[in-house]
Image (cartoon, rainbow, N blue to C red; front, side):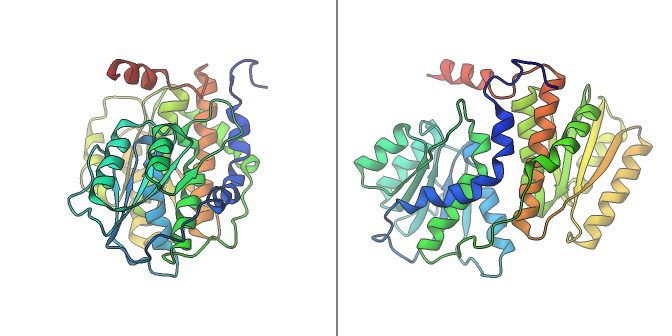
Length: 333
């Protein structure tokens, strides 16, 4: 039984209802008119920071996992400016959950100046204002949760962005929604969180699932308010692992493994676990479950949600607020 008052904004409900984001993401796009937009582009550029930038990375992996080839170069831009190859032939997604992210708004304004095709995604704010002022198609996020955080809008945004591409004849809609059960992963997440208490988590996965490792790292930072780090195979085998020759902290390594990972990646995971344990590190391999790439990555997200949620409980931290981020924004204003 969790202590009363620990989870003021009921993040547990957000996690339990995570699977519903798949159908809700489609609904956000249904009311948006895209008929006047072109059907040919030179590239797709997705502009977003923090939790609003991750949908671009996930969308890239998702499109690569599907049978239909996505022919456009895709760039995720996490700064104040568009890439140099952005022009009037670019399709630009503006992604800011709050609608007020200064870096993303800067990209929005530059995209307007270049005459690019723009579709914006936000819950409101200045992004909505600029979209209405300039007749830009605007996908509005409407959430039923108090204190909802951008880091939990990832799947809403993924499906919404893919649905826009579908309407532009650049992708296919998600027809068969994965069968997900958030509750089934809760106990495992709680048990892992107990093993992580008092230690610094290191999260690894293959290149295909690195967005899952990254999201778990972020949610441990923001939910449990404690440091965590991530990397991916095979890159970490060429540099990071050497740093554990002489570890300077109390680390716990989680390695996500999928049966469809390259055989050499799976070998690297097993050997790395052995080498780390020889250096006194605790490490465990988590088998990824699911039928499709989408189902697998969402299961990684949900398990990570529970791990970070219960680690927040172990540290007596309300998982929802991100006070240091808000303090930074106030000082920058």
